[in-house]
Length: 382
Ligand SMILES: Cc1cc2nc3c(=O)[nH]c(=O)nc-3n(C[C@H](O)[C@H](O)[C@H](O)COP(=O)(O)OP(=O)(O)OC[C@H]3O[C@@H](n4cnc5c(N)ncnc54)[C@H](O)[C@@H]3O)c2cc1C
Image (cartoon, rainbow, N blue to C red; front, side, top):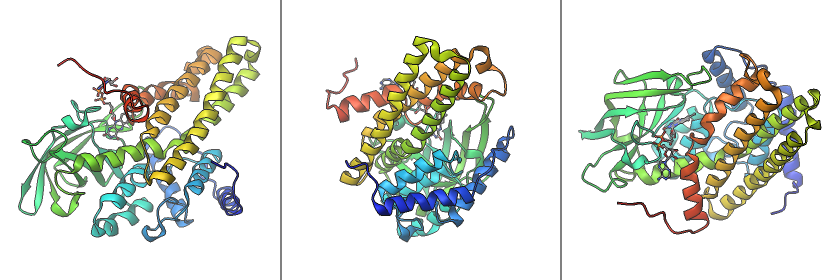
């Protein structure tokens, strides 16, 4: 593909750069997670007011109707300006696009606008204590009662649930059907007593995600997305968007971390060490590869109309590269990388989750082997 920007694309980038220069999100508040979240929510409101929330959404849904290249430019520029991701990232990147494919007109009318403005925050209720990678093994049950569904079960690792109004919930509606076929995708209102959210503290000290205890929650029929029993297919749309959507922003963040590490290594005289120089060079090559892969992923979306399994390769390589980068930082900075308050200490601890969130590395490798390389399916002993 041609990576030279057209006049329109350059004009889009310049307009965005000027807007970002005039709308500095300011420094992230330190320490308090609620304040940090409020800061990111305010940032999304400002993006929305400026017409920059959901740039990739069609104009009929309140987006900017940006082309794929402009969307890539948007995320690259956001990263370059060191601006945060919008607070409702799961709504913008996963929930909205899933509704655009599978939602009814009423669902789109009701939900898309408040996702864009960050008025209503979304979370993703897929994982359960015994159903993470094997999503189809989930046990949360939804039973029809009149014109609504009664839901009981437990979810886990639900990022942002403490701030969410809506949950993309997958539940079992047919216990007799084959395990992939008995699932339904719902939009569950989190603001009901039947839904309890309990924070899980991570190794970083933050509680980004939660356990959800659901005890006879009510979901109206109108909140079924994509039809009863079709939840597996709808969930796959969400998962494919999860793996493809963040590629641009994340690869820019990776590049910035690498630049920071390079500067730090220079200050400490570590560039004289051939092993450090070699590891930095390898990371530079990986960052460039990821940038080009993100572009390649875009041309695949252009061709096939939706993200493909290639997103799994990008996500896997991104998580490995980020982990290698923070490991090198720990070697270069020594004890300084582990001191409380050091940004590297946070990066080092947070990077552990990269190879689990959004699909574990083992699962992504299986997808790449089977669906990208066309290798035979792994035979497991009965
Ligand atoms: C930071 C973070 C945020 C998250 N946010 C959310 C969220 O918002 N919403 C949500 O629903 N979930 C979320 N998750 C959960 C995440 O999607 C799951 O942790 C993930 O899917 C793995 O599931 P599991 O933890 O049950 O591990 P398991 O599926 O039990 O896997 C354990 C190990 O076995 C391996 N394994 C399992 N099956 C196979 C196989 N067939 N072949 C080879 N290896 C296999 C796995 O790769 C892994 O290494 C989050 C996780 C993290 C770390």
